[in-house]
Length: 102
Ligand SMILES: [Zn+2]
Image (cartoon, rainbow, N blue to C red; front, side, top):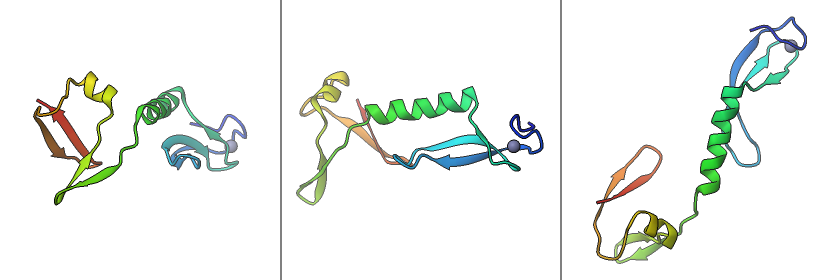
């Protein structure tokens, strides 16, 4: 893809990070003038990451004997029909811990 601004350079795919929240995104940058362009598709991916971040909740780990406990917010507990005494499965994932109520 040729640069639409200077028409001399070539647009190269590169990864960048939003400074304010550390979200990684993909864009095209001209190797001549440095102009940066984000395609509709790249924008959709970025918007999706922001939606996910807005829905995310911060949790605090508490000590429970030799283990740690995580408080699950009530709206999440209700949405997944989790209540005291119910069982679930905890799995180790690349980016974190996943809890699947059974
Ligand atoms: Zn250019």
